[in-house]
Image (cartoon, rainbow, N blue to C red; front, side, top):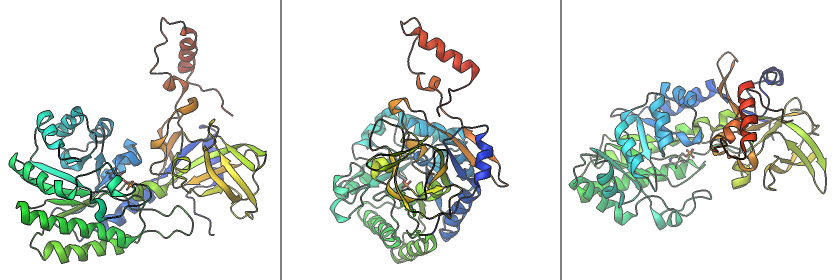
Length: 440
Ligand SMILES: *Cc1c(COP(=O)(O)O)cnc(C)c1O
C-alpha cells in the first residue's frame, strides 16, 4: 500500500501546536479550490446558465469554506434553519441556495422563501404545507425516490426503506398540483446513494432522472429548468480505492443528456448537483497526539481525539487512513486498535490496523476528514469539539473555528441562583482567563 500524501510537515504541526493544542482539523484550501475547478471544468458543457454545485453544507458547515466555494461558483445545499443562516451569512441568496430538507418545520420554509432559495419538497403533502406556511414559490422542485426500481447502497440503503422523496406515482401528481397552484418553473431532484465511486452507477442515476423528466413533460406538460443529480459522489478512503473519474462521469452525463433530453426536445435544462464529500472530503486531516499506548489482550493506541471529532469509523465502520508523522517509511509491523477516550468501546478510529511502532507523544494524522467529520461531532461524555484550521496558499494556517471550551458545553445550563452556582463561577473564571485546563 502506498502512503497517502499530506500537504504539511511534522515540523509545521509542532510549530502550530505551540499555540493550539491538538486535536484539530486542517483543511487544504488550494486543494479544495482545485477540486472545485475540476468539477466545473468537467461539466462546462452544460448550457442554459451553466452547471452549479450546491455544496452540501452539512458536510463542512464552516463559513470560511463556504466562502471559498462561493468564490469557485458554488451555491449551498441547506437542510435546516442554521444551514440557511450560514448560507445567508456568506452572502448567498436566491437561487444560489437549494433547500433540500425533510420532516421540515413551517418556520424553515418561511426562512427559505425569505432568502429566495429553491425549495425542494420531500413529500406530496408538503405542497399544501408549504402553501399554508410560506406560499407556493414560482419555482418548485421535488425529490424523487425510485423505490424498487433502483438499488441504493450501504449507507442510504434500499430506496424502499428510505424515508426520502416522492414515489413514482406521487411525483406525476405532485407536479400537476404544483402547476395548478401557480408554480411556473420546475426542478427535479434525487439523492439515492452515498459515497458511490462507480461512474456507471452515477451516470445511470442521471439517465433515470432524464427519462423521468421526459415522461413528466409528456404527462403534465411542464418543462424543467434544472435537474439536480444530488450528492453522493464517493472518494477513496483506502489507499488502493480508485477515485471517481470526474471527466468520465461528466462525459457520460453529457452523452445521456444528448440521448434523452436533447433528442426529446427538452433542452436546454440546467444540470446541477449537491456534492459535499467529493469537494472537501479528501482535503481534511484530523491531527492528534498519542496519549497512551496500552498492551492488553490487544495493543491499544489512545489518542487525544475521540468520536467527538470524527464519528464515521464508529458510526459506519468507515475506514480512515492513519499516518504517523515522522514514521511514514517505517515498517508497519504492529497491530493496533486506535482509540479515543469515550467510555464507549466503539470509540475507535481503526481496528486491528497495521501501523509502525507507536510511542506516547507521537503525532498521527487521520485522513479524509474534510466532509462529515467535524460536523457530525457531538458532546457525549462531556467531550469537546476541536478547532478547525485552513491551510492557505503559501503555507499559513488560519484558525477558522476555535476549540470548544467547557463554557460552551455548559452554555445551555442556567447555573445562576441555583445550588450549582459554584460551578458557574468556576466557568466564568475560566471564560475570563480564556484558558482551558490542559487535557493531556
Ligand atoms: C448528505 C446530502 C448530500 C451530500 O452528500 P455527499 O455524500 O456529501 O455528496 C446531498 N444532498 C442531500 C439531500 C443530502 O442529504
